[in-house]
Length: 305
Image (cartoon, rainbow, N blue to C red; front, side, top):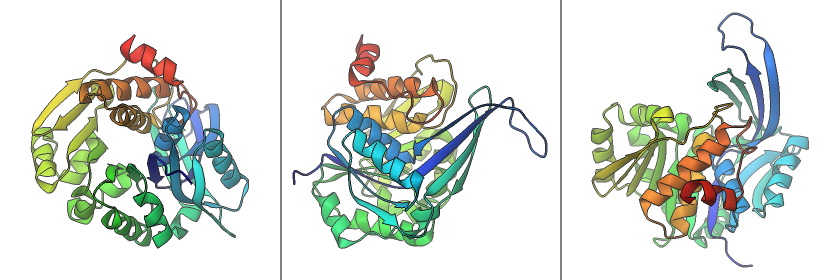
């Protein structure tokens, strides 16, 4: 079998999103709209890359239920290899309940389900070792986390690693993630995740420390303020692409997909940053992490006109 270009590893979830008039605590709000679809950070990124013609595979776990089958079907519809996705008997597929207000802000509640059962094996390591890139995002639970660290340590030196720790892994702190970060070629974080991970809101100080650890390229998404990409001790800001924000779910994953697509095409970092920005803007316009995924022609038309 021909090896894949990129392998993703992370949570596989069924997203249940509810659009409400306002986010409330100990109160009531009206549901304006709802949306259900496949999700998971690395999974969203891999889905988009496959949709744009990149040969991709995924390592993860789903339950033996309707939602698990839908997740597999959606991957396969864009050509993602799923032979390393486990179907865990008697376990529900991971589920995310998302509450999204009219400004697109959200609260997410994760029930990990079958994701908790994922333990990576030598076969997974061998599968990932044949790829050009591995893209990693978080899993709930210490055993799954340790399993991912083993995967990273087992990667051959000619396999590049991109890492989107998300809020779950960022909260583990720098020392817990250091063995992964040492091996990371591209780190994708939000400004809040970076502050949590590094213990500072000073972007320059955080970046300097990450470079010292061994991270090559740092990509920080800044919401309406755009993004910042740092490489070899220098960083550059780029504005966001104006969009009517319906839902922010998956926007960072879309940014990562656009950026990685550019990297895979050998484009300079400024163009990769532009591709990520535009991919995220498409995502923001629709409910759900994947609904707004553009075609590659649409992405390139807006990015480079």
